[in-house]
Length: 221
Image (cartoon, rainbow, N blue to C red; front, side, top):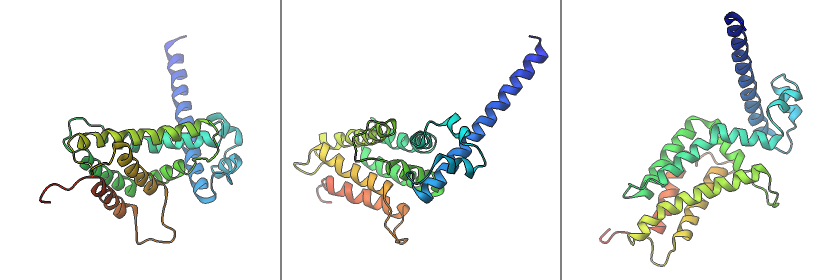
C-alpha cells in the first residue's frame, strides 16, 4: 500500500473511532436521563435509541443490555470516586487515616456537588442491588464496589484500633460496618421532599458523628 493511501485509511479509522466514541457517550447520557426519569425497569433500549435519534442496532453495537449500560456508566463516572476514597483510606503513612477519610469525604462531596450527573450515576448504580441471588455481571460489580469500600474502611480502622483509640470492646469489623453503612446510605438515598438537608452539608457532619461514636475521646478532651 502506498503512503498516501495508507494515510487516508488511517484518517478514516481515526474518524470512525471518534464517531463511535461520540455515539457511545451520547447513548450513555441518554440512558442516564431516562433511567433517572422512568427507572431502569421502565426504560426500553428502543427508548434510549429514540432519545438520540438512533436505531436499536446502534445501541446493541455498543451494549448488550441495560445492565451493560449501567456498568459502563459506573466505569465512566463512578469508579474514579470510589478509587479516590479507597486510596485515601489505605494510605499507610498517615497517622490518622480516619480523619484523612473525613477530609476525603468532604472533597468527594464537593466534587459530586459540582457534577450532579456523576452523583446520579453513583445513586443509579447502587440502586440496582437486587434481593434475588442472580449472579449477573452487574450484581458482581455491586458486590465488588461494596467490598472495596468496606475493606478500605477496615484498613483505616486498624491503626487507631492498634493505638487503643477505638471504643472499648468495639471490634474493627463492626466499627467499619457502621461507617460503611452510613456512607452507602448517604450515597444512595435522598430524604423525600426535603431540600433543607443536602449531601454537601450532611455527609461531613454524619461521618464526623460516626467517627465520634467509634473513637475514644482523648484524655482531658
